Image 1 (cartoon, rainbow, N blue to C red):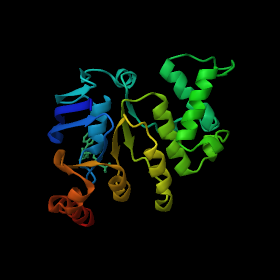
Image 2: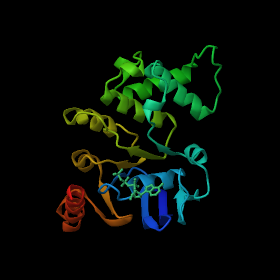
Image 3: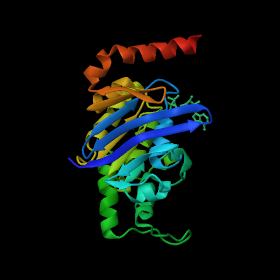
Image 4: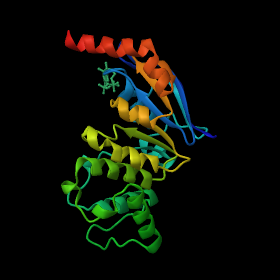
Length: 252
Ligand SMILES: Nc1ncnc2c1ncn2[C@@H]1O[C@H](COP(=O)(O)OP(=O)(O)OP(=O)(O)O)[C@@H](O)[C@H]1O
């Protein structure tokens, strides 16, 4: 399978604090991978480095074989590196369908007139309906996002990310705010993601991570502690130590 993301020797220092310390990892087409680690491990920093929000102190990031280390976030998006949208920042009164349409317009970099008609052509219409169906959102297509339940908001975030035709999709806490009893809806939708997409999930919910990911990377103090299957990770005493250690520090 094609290697779509490679991170090599990634270092990030904030003053004297090293938050990413020689991180090496790669993701192939079709992989379902997760990045976990206790609070402060450097997960958000890692995602910000990969997506271009932060500049690394050292190291290289390759997307589909091309060095993108010096490219700004939008140029990485155009090359297929997509992080799931934060819906709270979008337009509360627009409907689910209108949001998907806007994401498709963004991909095509077509401008739209603020007071003009926003009528999609037939191909765009079909793509909108496909994305809604894949994410299980067809029945709420006309609902404004301000009235959408958390679980459905999370699904819309994934639909918006898919609208940008990702090669590598970064899912940042895809079930945030969703009651545990409903997280299966998110997992069901994630099962329907395009097979050749490379997915990196960052989440604290171990049930979700263990059910979704074939490979799990554990980050601790900015370094990769270990990686492996759910069974390997849950049996690794090093993993238990960093989680228990961080909880003990939180209590102190
Ligand atoms: N801009 C910054 N300046 C200085 N230190 C920072 C900055 N951003 C993050 N840090 C520090 O880097 C470390 C890693 O933070 P990061 O947010 O990447 O961890 P995380 O694994 O995402 O944590 P959480 O699970 O709590 O979100 C923390 O010690 C944090 O205080």
